[in-house]
Image 1 (cartoon, one colour):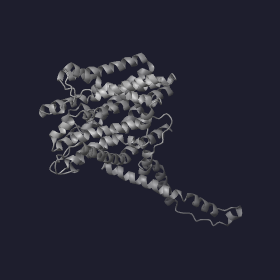
Image 2 (cartoon, helix red, strand yellow; image 1 turned 135 degrees about the vertical axis):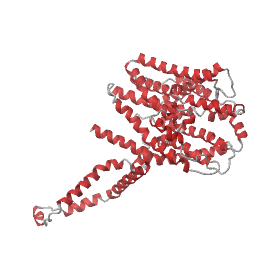
Image 3 (spheres, helix red, strand yellow; image 1 turned 180 degrees about the vertical axis):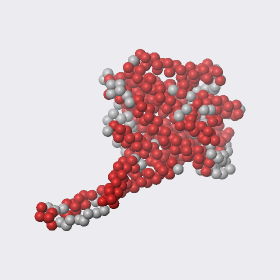
Image 4 (spheres, one colour; image 1 turned 90 degrees about the vertical axis):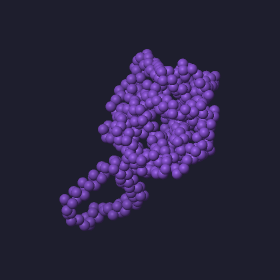
Length: 504
């Protein structure tokens, strides 16, 4: 029902814009005609006929309706597909914006989708043995370490929140509209998220069929726990009780956002306190990761796939338990903290008018960042260290990856990113980047619907999976475009319209 309302209002808003567009070209002609019909002298005016009085009640009703329609135009135009679509594909960037983030955001989303293609297709494979051998290859660590793509989003989120906050804090002399700070974030994400949840809960069972289709009824988890998603606490549910299992990221991101002012305000007003709090939060994530890995004897990762899958039941229990642990904020916060730290450093650097980095510093930075990042991705291949080393690696690997990504953002923002910055700032990424949130929501639905609707199992090969990936990538972004035009963009414009009304 709610989806139908959004569609109806979108049709109305788009129709209004289309009508105004097609009538705009005739406006000047009509003005000329109106001027030619008006009296040019007092004598002409005297010769004009006097109209008879009309029905005043009917005129008043008509004027009231016209006034209501005129006042309602801004509301309906918020749902206009043409205007919202134009804004989505607009690739112009203003001074002070950070275009490199668009490339990082889209490429990270592609990494997420690629990992999901392999994982979601696994239950539907004929050649699981060959697939496991493929997964045991060194290059396949890129897929197995796909969780770093989510850490990329945490770095970006922490960086953007803090980067914009520090600028506003300095400009307003510390006067932050805190109610708006939190309401803006909640309104920005929740409506489209809840619309997708409603669709997933009620209609998922009817999207496919076949011998492999196991979505026979409405998801009972969503019926029972949907309000956990609404409040962004769903990452504290176990894997067995999750509604929209991939939405744990959204819960973490919102929780980090809620506590971020504690760090950001402290850094601005009492830097020593801010540094101390950053250290405390880093310490919490380090200790939490080390503790849970050590106590529950988690493996260091998917490093020896064939061997680890020999006892699949035991493996599944361990990794399900690890999922329940790894979705908690005290486990995943360190990349977000790295993003905040980077934003603060760039803010202070701008205040101090720091110059460009020397060639030596730039070279050393790239070497260190590359070595650290590649080590986190490929360094544990076929390694089975003792539990202490495993626990230590688990405690620091996300922070190390986040620091490597932070270096890339840093050099791009200060204008010394070179070819990397040019590639990441390519205007082609901008519209795709804007659709990332919707693409993140819809892409698992598209992938699972396809695989579960197959009439027969499939044969796994890298070529097959890559072709699937690009097909799903295109389909997911097409679906994301529809979702954005129907729900996300209208809500963003409505929120801005209401804010401007209150401001005036």
